[in-house]
Amino acid sequence: MFKFTVTSKSTETNARTGVIETNHGSIKTPVFMPVGTLGSVKSLSPEELIFMGVQIILGNTYHLYLRPGCEVIDKFSGLHDFMNWQRPILTDSGGFQVYSLAKLRKINDDGVAFQSHIDGSKHFLTPEKSMEIQFSLGSDIVMCLDDVAPYPSDKNKTLESLERTIKWALRCKQVWEQKPGNGTLFGIVQGGMYTDLREKSLEELTKIDFQGYAVGGLSVGEPKELMMELGAFTLPKLPQNKPRYVMGVGTPEDLVELTANGCDMFDCVMPSRNARNGQLFTKNGTININNTCHKDDTEPVDSQCNCYTCSNYSRAYLRHLYKSRELLAYRLNTIHNIYYYTSLMKKMREAIKQNKFEEFKKDFYSYRAK
Figure (spheres, rainbow, N blue to C red):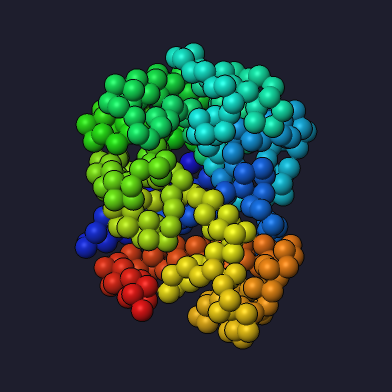
């Protein structure tokens, strides 16, 4: 089961709201997906995620394939039961992790040979293998295996990567068509930092026809201005009647700007990873809870935040926990950051429905200027 419906549009920007229907429930867009790398959003339970308004999480195909392995997850009929999460799950293809983590990676048109970053064991990931792993995980949204061009890459290298991504997308689609009922399949637009290659990628992928489209290969080290330029260029060109997803992005400002350009879905490790490093997101920007100024601060992280952390604990206590390396620090910080992100998306959805997105943006940035 998969259906996407656009429910409202901003007349001032390309922002829009929608509903994605899956076998594990509906998702209101635009939506942020916390990353559950190994079948968990680090330090948080599924019940806490639900309480914070999380609608869908992302699982990492590469990591879950290596540990605990499909043979374990198969005993639970998929990742939903294994981790006790009965809402939608999107899984990435494993391509980015192979690109960024694997040792001695060798790539050709057949697939990618790599050594595990865990134990050095040898593996070969093909489009067909990526599909089989994601089917085993029981993903609601499955991503095609893609070849991510590093930044910087010259045009010839980027074109080679793009052409391989298209070939792999065709193979993924063929496997997916042979096994109906295994989640919906999204294609991934590549093309590096070249607008003409992005257009070529988009044209070829739309011929294959996927139920959703992602913009990949961004936030890989390029300047922020270039990332936003490419996002603004690519998003409006994607099919209007399909979900549009920017992968691996990003900051609250990124989410606001790319939503204005028509993005429906986001994922990023930032809220959970930054929480573990003492970085907390607020309406006034990011604070570092490790700073001395918070030593005896009796105020919550954000006085207008209704999360569990802000409702019960002071900055002074959070700093104390963090300085003491208490595990509770990571939990409370992560609760706040995930809640901040889900609340931000909810506010954007409401602003779009009321056709007040530009007013929302102005208000959003006005707090950061104080």
